[in-house]
Length: 506
Figure 1 (cartoon, one colour):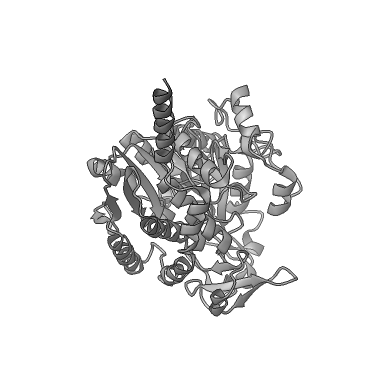
Figure 2: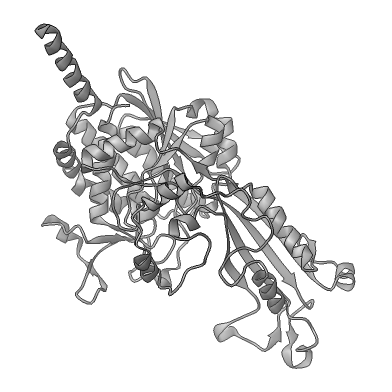
């Protein structure tokens, strides 16, 4: 009996050791040993421009990624798309692995306006420290030779969105090699070089290369954690579609003295049209827009578990009140949104002139949730515009249309990708939660749906796999804006996080 008990205890201990290859102290030690090299690699990678509008620059990023993953014993393949830019697949198999984890990384960045950046150039990364007044001042890179302040930041386009996670993952792979262990699962890494363009060719490419991408689950290394910067897992993301509306006025801009009060002003008409889509509380009033969304008691409990400080969020954003879609921030992002992301009519600033514009254009994005069908929402918007008396066309109106219809608008739309959502208690969620708990000593913050959009639904729907996001960059990183940055403390923690996942058995 005693022998049997000892054997059972031994087997239980062995099972625990097998489940987690490193404890938290070991993870920190091996990960932190890669920190200095990671910063150096980060600086090099950030120096390669990555606006996907410029294909030659993207090809340089592809070459860098090929070398980086090949050096780490991954088999690298460029998968053709219907566009000029491919997606990259890096694969590695490990002994005794029974399952395969697909990892999503993004390598392109938003366009830049270098006049808005407080440094020589957005693609010339700089190291900055905050002074007593809260201003960020450039400091010499040689400061990294001494004690590194985790509050220092690297400023450059794509620092956070999303070259930071790439560097974190590569450093975690190097740390794993030094720790002399392999994961008990195979790894496939997909790198998207056109995410900021809406990944226009990704859905079709996933279908074409389905066999090569076949995996058991997907984890997304992208985005910021909870606003408190605490370790976070995100189990869903909203999808995105877009609409362009152009309201037409006179054939060409007209003198406002001669034709003001006579020629209808398309800017006023567009403003009224857009205003008719929402009430004073910011809720979409197009009938049926929110149909299918239900925040039941179980869902409320999940949302209330997120430690949001509404006053702090409002202060950070700089607003005195919020729209009333949902009762709080987490509820708000469970609904589809209708957002004016840009407007244009005639000229402003130093170029302003006294004219009645010829046209006025609004660019709209519609964030999607799992329950909302994008085609249905677009059709509702279109029907609403027609209900306001507009004749909808494609392109410019003909002379015959100008003479026949009092209100004319061009309507165009596109659907980038749908939303996805994975249960907290899924195999993927449970596995990642264990890795986080081993490293941080407690469960991560778990977010049901994140507000931003990432092109994951093609993988979820085509490959039939669950997906969970592992966000690591600082929430105040200025992504998509001038002076984008990554906090060094988040870079260090990201390497630790990814190593903890590599060390956690499936």
